[in-house]
Length: 230
Length: 313
Image (cartoon, rainbow over all chains, first blue to last red):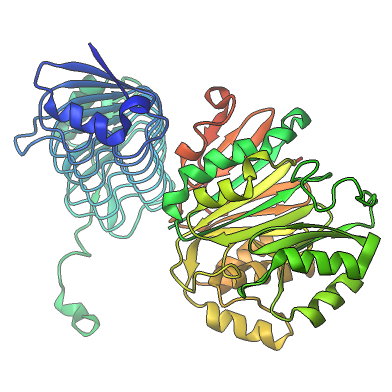
């Protein structure tokens, strides 16, 4: 296993070295100390361990359109927008994540073992965001496609202005956002949650006891009743 | 973008290290605010180190309770060494002066007299700060360079606030820089913006509030100070800021012995806190905290929106 020290190479140096690696390479990134933009834009199916706390945009823009990409394991917490615009691959954060985790992510899996701050999964476009702990206010804001799994409780405004993404919550929901509704769990939903629990190891979540939140679809269709407002 | 920083020292043994803790934090947030910066330091003694004040060896004893620190600054190019010398010759034993490139910190046992002299001799000079323990310096240009030129790494004290500014609402000058000190020993730094600051300022001006700049954050800080003056606690006062002012903020607010942080309802602007038995530090980003002593054992968390967190000395 190679080691890339952020202290020695700087952020750009580390990212350039990561870019040259091919599967099945395995590498440790050390001394991250809250640096932004680590391990971004990588497509090879390599394995990256980040030994410490990372800053904004960790692993962002990674993966390819077939959903393949690097496996990134962060042994610490991350700042804003972990896995922003992710296309594929897997990001596991052992600590908590700050705001906008998985923003606009289209593919891949983002796992957060701690809590996620406000607006996790904002504008999600197909990826899976799994949070073992609590999720902050406005989680899933305007999420268009994909799945958000929350093992703990959520803040206010869950799923505000949701499109077709689906949110599963094991704990309590402080309040729903505009156009978000609780729907009955179907057998397929239970299977989906079961599969996610197996994949993430978040086995404190009981698949048949979660709450499903989805769009009421009242907000994003134009309605002739509201003609005067447009 | 801007960077906000606060450190409250709990273990007095760390007070001599305040500046050396502060500089890496400012360096880390320099890219969030590359156009200007400001530092406020609270100290019981001399924050700038022994022998740094003018006229070493002949310093009058100004350690009594009646001594006030007055931080001066101006957007006009002034020969601050000359200003310092003039103040000393005019006020004699009543002052000690530490001059900087863009201002001076004067310790005085006769503040009224000092301010009269300043107003009549240098009408372009403004009060950057006033208080028992508080000294304020501000300058334009890269914050890292300001730290080196001013020797901020050697400063001492029990509480410091710093700001790196990326101006969005008003000019880049010394007087437009943070921190703002709207009342004695009360210091405010702001990351964010307020869009209705002109209309919020108008009734305040009508009530007699005097402004040193047209900065949006100065309006918020003077509004906050006004609410505190009429008896609001900090939570009520910040609630009024949210009610009356339209914008986003992370605010770090300090008084003689306390540091507070509060974020707007949407937590639009970042903040991270690191708390240990020896100190509490707040910064816009974690990387500004990453070099602090004992950070691996610190409790690190993000302040929740609309919640006022306060730590005392």
